[in-house]
Length: 396
Image 1 (cartoon, rainbow, N blue to C red):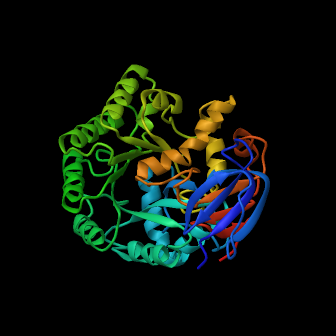
Image 2 (image 1 turned 120 degrees about the vertical axis):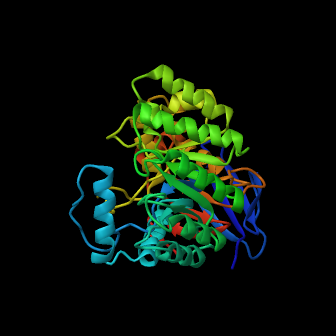
Image 3 (image 1 turned 45 degrees about the vertical axis):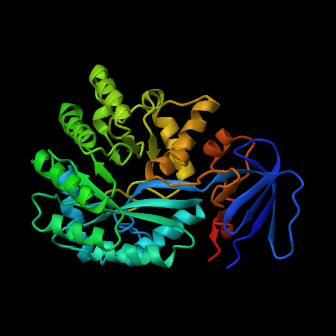
């Protein structure tokens, strides 16, 4: 497999025209007038902007309905309605985790994502089937996409017998991250759930990523407990909170107090910029030094019929949700979908600099902000020095 490539005439992150030389899957030189040695593949970027591979920091690869035909939405409005509806339809519709995760990986790849963090359900119905299916997809596409698997107790941790043990088993067999879900609203046992999660983290030496849909003061209460356990267990920089709707509460003083404590413990926030719920303020998190990253959440699943895996589109939605209009603000929205996700996941050697991994996405635009607003077809997607997608078509 050839992981050597020279990309001529591109503008790294919208800066001056340069060439990028990738050897052995890593960027070794960025300069003008670089010459390709024999045996190195050549690509003329034609003045395109070169971005690092996009990062989908929150999705659910095991649940997508991509390729299964149009399925009208059926779930009721509450979180419990959606969980129960999904449990029923997983078997009724044969939502096979291996098949569906592979479809979503290819969908994300053609849009320029080269790194994904996926939550995968573990419960007393599906047991480890979801984890095992997504793990097969991770192995199949390991040269094209880096996939982190979060073992996720979608139906509850304390109220779903055996889930803790199954998560423990999955972590022993290659899962990367420990998930959690609404310690009060789902389990009604915040101490029990968080104690179990942090115990698993301590046992396996793995990071944590907790879904927190709980609003207002209820969510703030749960967030306080997560922050305190992060401090007590010395897990600064290893904990993320997804959604964090409580940070969008009307009581801004309370929310800003939480943001300050998140910054102190280096806890990241993961958003999907949903238009239907209060969301964390991107500007407040940025100003406080809290890492903010983003993901697509579920893509055309039983929870909602929306989503296409395009992280440039997600950057646009993040900008719209936060009323970002200046170029610098829009660039920050893209930062959340690139560098922010990489920082949250602890990805080393990420970016468009000498020494970085050779993950590069070419887009035709005048500026980075325009790339977010226009969301042009990905001219070329490169993973570790090898072209894997071009103009919306996967090359593998």
